[in-house]
Image 1 (tube, rainbow, N blue to C red):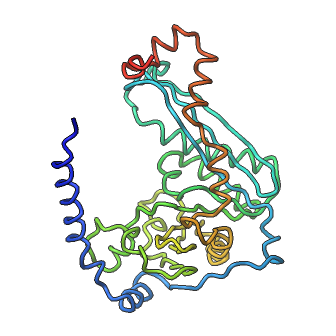
Image 2: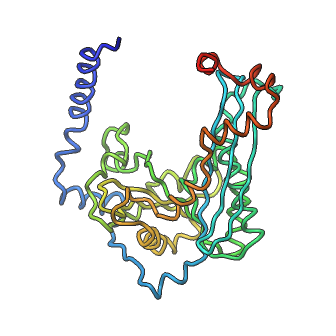
Length: 314
């Protein structure tokens, strides 16, 4: 039986320790904080929602997202499905899929291929959409760093393609993991921008991060850089982020306004179109189980991809 009393004590300790660690952050005077942000991090601007006659310019905005799900047990006895979706607000869409299992891979050293495959299929989906349709704005679900880490050559191809065709490429970051503010203000660098910015910005405000303090712009020689911003786009007190190619930096304010326009005030701060794409690309447990039971021989399914836990429920 679970020991609730011991768990209660440990969770309360986590609460106390977090408050102790971040106490000075919570207590920073907001006007002083905003002054430091403007001086050392980037300019705070007020975003604007586009009017109805202005939003028609963005009727072919394309959202790209990926999804993965796996069935089975510990490495290498699992099978994983990856899916990418590029979907335009005018109704056009492109899906791409990939099935992977380490049991067919002779190289067992690389056990962390999931993130690489997911990033790759998202870029491949975006490139295929570009080949098929004309449009002006390409919105990726997430920042650009993971593409450069997991599929640099493909990302360079996407970058060059967007620059050549004058497609504005940007990535919306739902869960900020950077420490730009802590580095700039000489705070503990284990403190992330997510917690520092919580309830600091007013709804409709953005911070245009200075390129000279943005690691994404000068990232260890990993190729071309990005320009970035933080923003609060709804009544939810948290901030999100955006990356844009450094060569398209002049469009950063416009893109911030577009993201703000596409985000419902009652949401958690993410553009509605990305939520729609996320829902459509999702591979649920039910879909995955149905596919495996339908298209794998039963003995193959049980021999390779049903874990001991699954067997107990059969």
